[in-house]
Image 1 (spheres, rainbow, N blue to C red):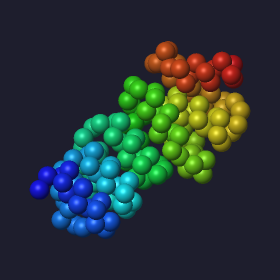
Image 2: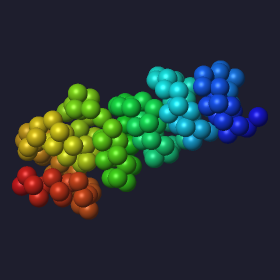
Image 3: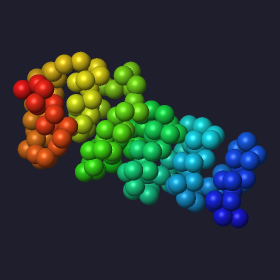
Length: 152
């Protein structure tokens, strides 16, 4: 039985079945589809598969669709990825309560999110300086440019 067939059977049965879950664990895309239908966070074996895939888009989708919030294990990979759209998509799935200063320091988009959602204004000096340091490494960052334009 393929993972896709296992997913179809599990969805029809409307209940998670361990043998089917094992088949689903063979493909990160099926993990995400199954996790949407049967939320079961944490699901350590699925998270290991998603993380091992090194596919940041899948990590963000898993956090958004299955975890439905912050997934600290994936954050280092997400923050290092060059696609700010993925940074912003990840940030958008977090509640204000999940956003803290340590998380925000991970990348320019997260600092911008922290300034907008938590502080609702200009970052404290040490974080503002962190944003400027990000500017030395990623001058073309739309998040950094937008923040600095609004908070010189």
